[in-house]
Length: 380
Image (cartoon, rainbow, N blue to C red; front, side):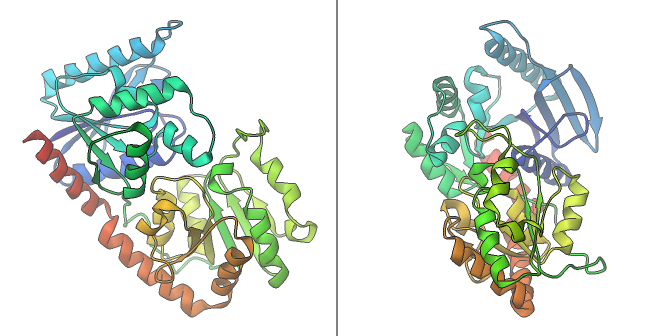
């Protein structure tokens, strides 16, 4: 098959910054090409129009058209034209796009369109308990209604999305994936005792403002405990503060703060090194669809303490391959971290079970086959 992915982000040096959506598309693209399918990646919002081929994937960098009041519409029509040209010249079978801001709301190419839920703006605003922009919700709803088929990375995200948009349609559930060859535990590198790692954007919805209060409790019990934070510093949407990290610092106890290191953004390969050498990974998030970061840490056989909200049980089985605790239950969250810091056997057991779960459910081979089978069903 010939499949095109339409996205606003992709983890490539020529494409700018990327988050979880881009990473999930990258992993799926690799899995599909390895299975013999042809993949095109169309990235809009770029600084120029460029086409290039790399590792058997054809990339289209698409520059948005900027005309006051008509930019979105004209850009959508430009994308539609590019897709139809691909269909004409390459016999493209279908296009997949994420639900975020409903980019396909006015794109109707001459092939089926599949929408995969990674979490719309409407969805995240709902989880954050804040209002959504009218136009964002309008376009997201229209894109979902117009799609030929619907996918979701988690059942939780599908259920909430159906409620928010009053959809009477079913979603196929296919999770995000990971390249297991790139994420494996390297026992030859130096392991650091009592090291707690958080990697991801510093932002309220990912529980960043809960982390200081959790770590304070850990530090009271274990003065050797160290907290390492990796990720981009984001502004806070509720207080309008330009830096979540600035908001976090006063929340740490003075002594505990001495054992906290914020490293900012680091390269993808460097993150793997920090995961590998850490003792425990923590993810006290309030809003996700199906987090790739959890899967990456689990693939590297790391013990995890994560949020117990919604999607969490579709990734982690509590007390089997990780611990699940509500982010605002600071004392209990800290107790689980302390338990793992002190119990090497339990960390090892969680790590083995975590890798097994990822291999069975989240590898790019498994997810690519599920996706390809779904595409075939749509085309038939």
